[in-house]
Length: 328
Image (cartoon, rainbow, N blue to C red; front, side):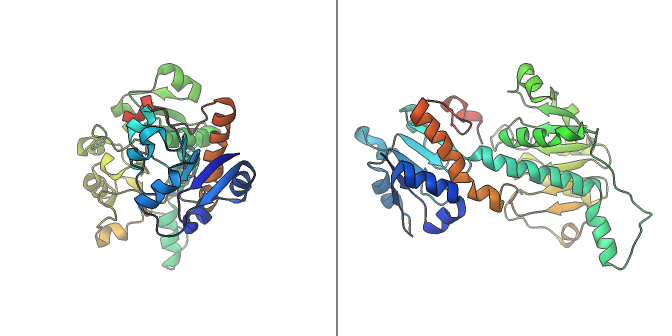
């Protein structure tokens, strides 16, 4: 029986380890569960002789010394998203297999983006405010539809692919800007590639790029000024991707609508006009945070680990060292 160490607090384990994951752990592994007060030293001790190390948010950085002298886990299973702050790239190069549950989180993000598009397209915050203010039918504005409309997506990440899947029943013309997306891969996704300007000219724009030097300020003030009136912008990726000040100016002027789940900085400092604007949908970096999604994270990543250990199959959660430079 393989050994598994759960390097997360009991509170976090209750958050990301659903019943299916716990049954899998109990039947497949000789498991050791961490207690409260995780430290780099306690995690290193847990990891020293286990086959699989299960981590999540709150797990301290895994120092490369854990793998010194041929010791350390053969597999790291991260029941969360990005592993870049968890583990050094050189550890992957030593043959340690790393898996992330980012693909499961991506579905939650995709649902958020679809919900934000529909909410703003139908002008639901404005109708809600009108009714709460004692009004009823509104003649000054009317909601629109998503079906059949062009949707521009920046980045072909896992969250973008989840949104593309969810958009399929709407028959949208989905265009994607991503320098790393081939025409063949785009065709397989049912989308077409486009330049940045064309992608940002769509009436719906959704951002799905990692926080990298080349993506910071990707959507500039000039891009925002060229966007058509009533464009809906959804940012669930990273705040620095877009010129936030410029975007807020155009939303407050009534020209654009936006859903912001990420900000620069976080938490944001917003004035009264932004906080009361019905064309601005605000949320506190929770696009990937759902009750069902969190409970599924450990099971998602451990299923990939089982396929790896039993068959040598790289499942969807496998962290490819070659893709490290452009990964989130």
